[in-house]
Amino acid sequence: MTVDTKKETYLNFINGSWTASTSGEVMPSLNPANNDDIVGYVQMSTKEEIDDAATAAKEAQKSWKKLSGNDRGGFLYKAADILESRLEEIAECMTREMGKTFPEAKGETARGVAILRYYAGEGLRKEGDVIPSTDSSALMFTSRVPLGVVGVITPWNFPVAIPIWKMAPALIYGNSVVIKPAQETAVTCAKVMECFEAAGFPAGVVNMVTGPGSVIGPALTDNPNVNAITFTGSNGVGKVIGQGCLARGAKYQLEMGGKNPVIVAADCDIDLAVDATISGAFRSTGQKCTATSRVIIEEAVYETFKEKLLKKTAEITVGDGLKEGIWMGPSASENQLNTVLHYIEKGKEEGATLLAGGNRLKGEGFDSGYFVEPTIFENVTSEMTIAQEEIFGPVIALIQVNNLKDALHIANDVDFGLCASIFTSNIQNMLSFIEDMEAGLIRINSESAGVELQAPFGGMKQSSSHSREQGEAAKEFFTSIKTIFVK
Image 1 (cartoon, one colour):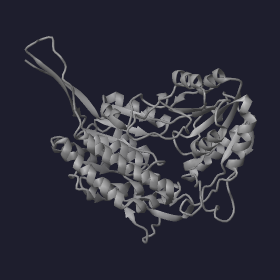
Image 2 (tube, helix red, strand yellow; image 1 turned 90 degrees about the vertical axis):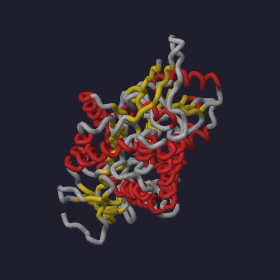
Image 3 (cartoon, one colour; image 1 turned 45 degrees about the horizontal axis):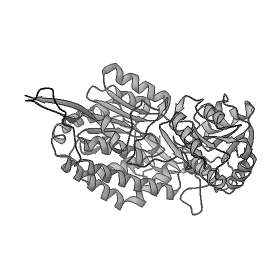
């Protein structure tokens, strides 16, 4: 491959140093809005680099865990300040690398800053509990201890927020980290790692290795020095990682997507439901595990909802996310675009009616990118592929039902259970939804996408390995409980 020497080549970060892979190979990171634009080159690493990073992390963790939580928090506060000072630069890189609009990228980067500060504060919160003993002359209590080396495997759709919401709790609780970012957004991750380096983290505490998932993923999962893996990505890959960790007794945490429903009850605020559906389905080009995918509507308001939804969808501006006035950017890669187009064709083949969109955008401003129209289907039945499988694109299926009971049945009729929302003004509808909906995140009169950083996040059924990320819940994964009995 010919390398454009005018473009920067980004290295791995191992044991406090930026180093090239022994493979000698690099891969270009392309702008999905204009694939003639090379954002930079990243390393095509090998198992050797993972082994080096894991060895360094294991050694560094011995000293890192002995620091007080307050001292570890100080490093996170410094990283937050540095990330904040580079917010626009890193957000622009994110938009160029994976396509989300610049305002969304700035919001995500700001969220990364907030997450770092939140977990920095965790260093001063309690680590265990005193438990009464049956022996009146004894003291019994628990302590939280770090796992050791945590392998972090992250996707391309949130290249700042997801790495940070995994790394920050791992670090504050005394673990060291080896991160393998998605290859499509490895430049953005490298810039985040520069913030950690500038914050002065001791060598080996934070490490980054880039490369193909088929090589780097198993090397990290199988490494005997890695005590735990936290993963966000596809269901298929997640299950392989879980099996690999289980085989050698390593702890694992998997977040694997969703097929998220929105229920529109007959008594709801229709305009609110329409606006939230569009935001939940089409922001970030639908490339969120929490994105709205199915909209289940009571028949009494179906036509009104549909008419308003189509009108609002027609107003969406699609284009390069760095340009003013653009509401939705491209699919993140050619592969992702082809996946979305495949599901659109599948919907048509299986008898769904295409109401809006469905095409790759062509012409000036579109030919060099991976743009697809916001797409809406109706006459969708629950057994159709587009109602069952995660598309990860701007495609929604409208499903008409007679009543809330039918709506809940259809909403639960999938393998996933990440998040779900309902629009209603009836408290009984709300309570039934909260009780019967099989999802880890329940939202009332709000879009399906979105969770606050201080709240637990994770899914049911095939959406996760049933642990939770973010908030205080992260402590459950990133630490182990030690029970102490003193006579």
